[in-house]
Amino acid sequence: MAIITNAPRGTQDVLPSQSYKWQYIEQMALDIARLHGFREIRFPVFEHTELFNRSVGDTTDVVQKEMYTFEDKGGRSITLRPEGTAGAMRAILQNGLLNDALPLKASYLISCFRYEKPQAGRLREFHQFGVEMAGAGSYAADAQVIALAKAIFDALGIEGLALELNSIGCPTCRAEYHKALREYFAAHKDQLCDTCKGRLEKNPMRILDCKNPACAEIAKGAPVVLDYICDDCRAHFEGLKGNLDAMGIAYTVNPTIVRGLDYYTRTVFEFVTTGIGAQGTVCGGGRYDGLIELLGGQPTPSVGFAMGLERLLLVMEQQGCGFAPEQKCTMYIGSIGDAAQQKAAGLTAALREEGFYVECDAVGRSVKAQMKYADKLGAKFSCILGDNEIEAGKVRIKRMDKGEITEVALDQEALVQYIYHNTIDEIVEYE
Image 1 (cartoon, rainbow, N blue to C red):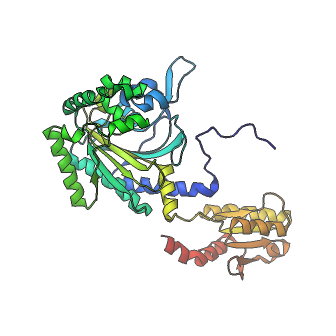
Image 2: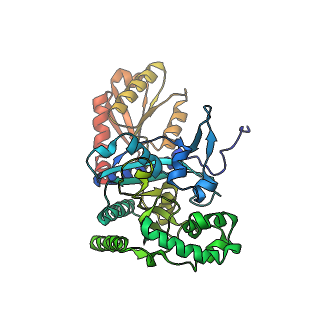
Image 3: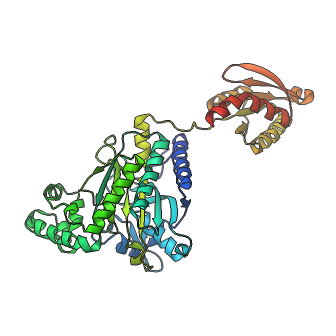
C-alpha cells in the first residue's frame, strides 16, 4: 500500500526503538542542570518574526536564508523558532521573571527549524537542550555555564570533545574591529558573494561566518578580534580562562569563533568533535549582555548555551556510550477463555499500578501466538490463566530467560512479591 506522502525533507521520525535513547539524554541533561540550579522553562514553537529579526540579526544567514516565516490568518508575520535564546528571553522578560532573585537560571528542551541543506547531524527540524543565566555579568558565570555543559557530556560518557573559546568584545571595542574588517574585506570586495557584499558596511563580522568557499578563504587572512578587544573585555576573558583552569577544564583559544547570531558579546565558546563530519559543533554558546535590553527590558547581562540532541546522539552511538536500557515487558499474562481473559485484564491493571510493565492479550490470539508475542516483547516472566488456574487460585510463572517454573498464588500481592524478589538484583545494579 502506497502512503500519501513521506516526511518532509530534512525531518526524521524518532521510532520507539530509538526514543528511549532520546529520553535518556533529555532526562540526564535536565537532571544535571537542576543540580546546577537551572529550572525548566517552556515557550511557544513560533514567535512574531520581529523577535528574531531584531535579536538574531537581519544580516545573519539564519534570518536571511534559513527561517521558516509565514503570514497567519490575521496577517501577522510569524516564524518557527530557529533557535532558543530569543524566545526564552522574551518569555523571561514578558513574565517578569527578572523580578525574582538573580541570577535567573532556566533550561529548556525544544525543537527548532531552519531551512538548510540536510546532512549528518543537521536537519531542518532539529532539537536542542539549552540554558540561560540572566543577571550575571561576571566571567565566573561564563565558567559555570561551560562547566554545566561539560558535566552533561561527562554524565553521558562522551569523550574527546574539545572546548574552544574566543572573545568578540563589547560594542565599544567591536567598532574598532569592524573598521579593520571593512578595510580588509573592501580590498577583496569583487570576490565576495552577493550576501557578504551587503554585509560589508552593516556587519562585516558576518562575513567571517559565511559558508561560501570563496568568502571563507578570504576570511582566513582577516584581522583577529582578540587584537582589538578593550582592557575590560580582555580582563573578562582572562578571568574566564583562570576560572576554567581552576576547575580543571581544558580549552583552546580559537580566534575564528564568532558564532552565527548577532546578539553575542564578549565570550563565545563551542564544544567540537571531529567524529561526525564537517558539522562537528555539538554545543555552542556565550554571552549576550545586550539582548534583554534590545527586547525592551533593562540592561541585564546574560550567558548560556545550546547543544544539539541529534549530534549528541550521533557522537554517543559512534563512541559506544551506554544508554539506560530500554524498558522491556516485565510479565505477560496469557489467557484461555473469557473468564481467564477478564482475570488477566484485572491483574494486568493492578500490576501496572504497582509500577510494572505488564501485558495481556488484546487481540484474541491462541495460546501459542500469545507466547510468541511475549517472546517478541522480551517479557521476563510469563504465565497462562485458564479455568483450572482460576479454580485452584494458583498460577505457574515461567522465567523466560532461564525456563524456571514457579507456582504462585493467583493474587496481586503474591505476584508483586514474586516479581520484586526475582528482579531486586537488577534494580539495585541499575540504580
